[in-house]
Image (cartoon, rainbow, N blue to C red; front, side, top):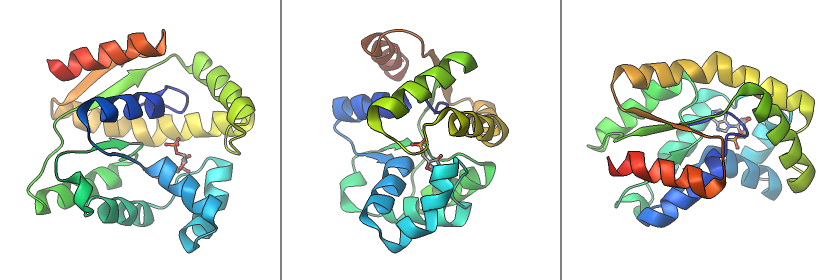
Length: 182
Ligand code: AMP
C-alpha cells in the first residue's frame, strides 16, 4: 500500500516477479478497461480522470473475479486494493471463503510534498490523464481520508510492515525484500 506516487506499482511488479506470482492491480485493470472502451471502462472513466474512487461494489467484484482465475493458486499480490474499510471487509469475506488470508501488508511511506511532485512528473512522462497537479492533490486527499484507515485496520491485526519510500528504486526494493524475508 502507498499513496499515489509512492512507487507501489513499480515495487509491486518487482516483488511479483521475484516470487513468481501475479500482481493484481485494480488501477491497471481499470485503466485497461478504459483503454479498451469496455462497459467497465465506460463506467469508471470519469472517476479515474477526476481522481475519485470507483464504487466499492464494482471494485470488489473485479477483484473477486480476478482472484478466481487459475494463476492465483500459488499466491498473489494486491496492488491498490483494498482502499476503503468496506473493501477490507469484502476482501475478508472473499479470502475466508477461499480458505486464504493476507500474510502481510507492506506500506511504502513517502512525504506528502514529494508525492505531489512525483505524480506530476509521472503525468508528464506517461501521459496519464489522472496525473495532473490538481488531480494529484485530489487523489492524495482521497488517500488520506479513505485509505489511511485501511492501514490502521491492518496495523491492529499486526500484519503491517512499513518501509521508507524515499531513495533509489533498487534500495526500496531491497527494503521490501528485507521485511518480506523477516
Ligand atoms: P492507482 O493506479 O492504484 O493509483 O489507481 C488509479 C485509479 O483507479 C484510482 O484513482 C481510482 O479511481 C481507481 N482505483 C484503483 N484501485 C481502486 C480501489 N481499490 N477502489 C476504488 N478505486 C480504485
